[in-house]
Length: 250
Image: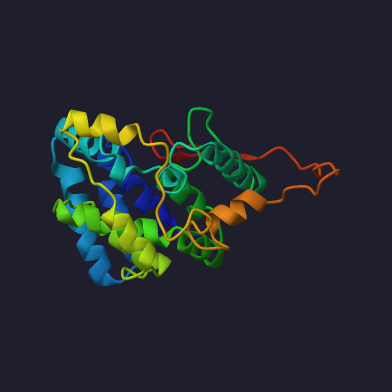
């Protein structure tokens, strides 16, 4: 299990007083665990320092502008795979089941594909498994890193780190196509309306090859699904609840 994923989750979460207070502890975890290289930790320090010393309301306003009002920077992974298509709903169900089969139950108000929540889940898994899972949506991380880099955002460093952990290839066709998709100014309300009216957002060379042919989305869709005509095996009720509010795992 790697607490580094927990730190990355906190850095991508809506800034709260608890996260601000935890900033010094984040640095200690990153140095103690040695999952990241020193230069990667150094790249994260401007964002951590801003969280530790910045005005909370300004930090929250910036976060909302970036990740809540800008569809191309959405932190919901399936937004970049299924858009608003019906497949997204089934993918949500499958991902939630993956969490539950691992003994984790998410809070009722959380969407399973929310990236900070996904990173919290990885923090509970053995490191080889976590690195395998994070490698599946690698092109999403690389694409978001480039879009944030264009905005000279300190959040770029988080996605650069995720891209490295996921071994993303920034030159891949999936990344190039993602970057070429419209990146609407959140202050352009007419353009925002038009973007949200799109039926589906598709990145990558084909709709059937999202995150790789045998990637995360394919694995989630097939995760422990019973064969036709059979019943799903019984399993114990999950013993751990992820409560992402305030970045706590109970």
